[in-house]
Length: 419
Image: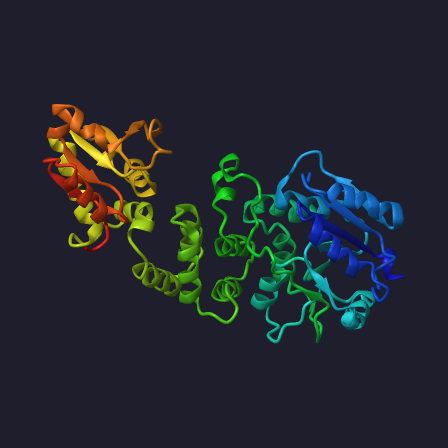
């Protein structure tokens, strides 16, 4: 019987209401798996998940509830299911999906024959490896043959856990072995979209920066490096966003990534020359300020043409570095932080950082004190210092404010954007 050959794990965290709706489908009268053993892996939820799951186990003896002592992250929960699987098949469910059980028959038949390495629960018009592994990113699309969960697979899963796609260690192994993947004509699983792309639900300040700055397309590309065949790997990176070409995918990536360098490096080191060209073409259409840190990094490796906005900024900073004249930075946001982190601006003679944001005043940014702009008028040293505007967004407003304050300081903008 199929129920004796399949491990079903449902991973969940803080989605009690969605979980209730999911189990309504899993345990409905027409559900072919309503009597199968389903193991819930609760990632230490803080909402009503535990109470709901206990009520389930009291009513249904086939539901087993396990609550992690601490939140081990989404990858940790997926890996836990992979490690725990002992039957022929492993199906990892999520807590916010729906099911159309009328289409289960062909999936059950594929599982019973045992001829496949992966059985999909979602249909796909294109059934090449790049499209199929892209679909497998979404759990619970794949049902895995557990013979592929080996020591090597588990080590690979841990190594790519920061991509939040540790299960791709199985899919990549199947591709490397030219395995067989079953794709149904109609979908049984209907993807939940109420919380799509909200992968990180722990306060980001507490997490390793690779996870805190997770971006799904960079995660795809990093995980695909487990694929041995270079041509298939290239095709996979060309189908990041189904229905979009590589440049369009990169446009979305750049809009979503918030300038984080490591994700960009993951993409560039995994791209061929044509893909790199598409990436930089997309980058040129995005504001320099958002990706200032990356532009600075690239300039150190490949010097930019001297007429670019970044080179103008570099020349100004080098001037202040050499002269060591006192300067006041105005604007303590992300762009200022990037300037202080990735350039020699931090080595200039900075008196303090001025900012209109009351929440920033009294704190430090990269070791420099943030204070009110009104402080500039309180001492001769401040009135003689040059004011360097370090925010691209409000440079015109700040210039008007400086004029309205009656300040006679020389004002220079380090904004990388064109006026």
